[in-house]
Length: 309
Image 1 (cartoon, rainbow, N blue to C red):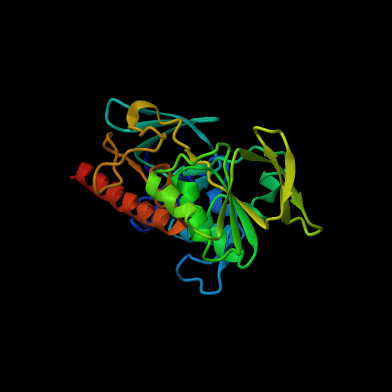
Image 2: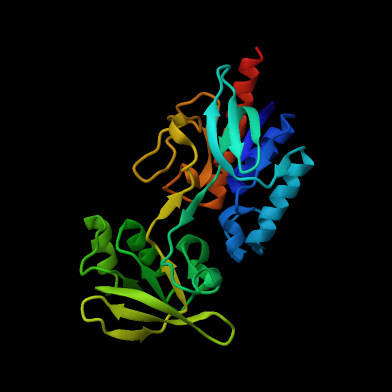
């Protein structure tokens, strides 16, 4: 019987492991299919506190893992398929090759950004394709970029990018934005943002270094194709939280994000906590995920202390 099982190895998961490890709970961390989470697909991270010169995403995750293991966290490279509650209030986690019993669970499985599904797209993530303007916008100063999407997130990303880019093309499949009126008006009123209506990206074009230099656009009404020179494409068509395995032990919102109790990382099932991007559709930053991982660990520790009297 484990005290704590942490599902996920991004900033939320490793921070939870550090805190529960220091509390002598010897947490078990299950890595899932992507050890280190989304940050392993990024290059330099400039906005994580404590790294004034920046740090590579994979290196940051490796350091967090080493710190968690230093305090007694154990890592198993397994994927959780299902969670069930036992009669005594503990939990059974069914993985791809065994079952694990635990008194508490911290779900820190993150969310996967939706991409366009183009042939070479995932190879270009970090090389001119990204899903986070806050993370990567500063790398594209004084060059043209594109944002794909038409909702609030796309408009917010486009406005943010005008601080850095020389031009922001807002590529949308329809002839009007589906964002809220205030967000749409703000984007369309910005001189540095140029909407590209009724269009989609069909191909990424790269330079000799393998970085994006342009995209092929297709007008969805006329079928006409054209080339647009941009140095980066920011895909803002939503995220998919990795919450499909949790069943009815937690409540989800319409987007699939785990609902936490007010001012807490706890869920509707006592003993199950959620932290990071699997529950956060607002901030989605490494530092906020780490903060929630800390909160979940402290709450899990207190929950176990209460059980033990």
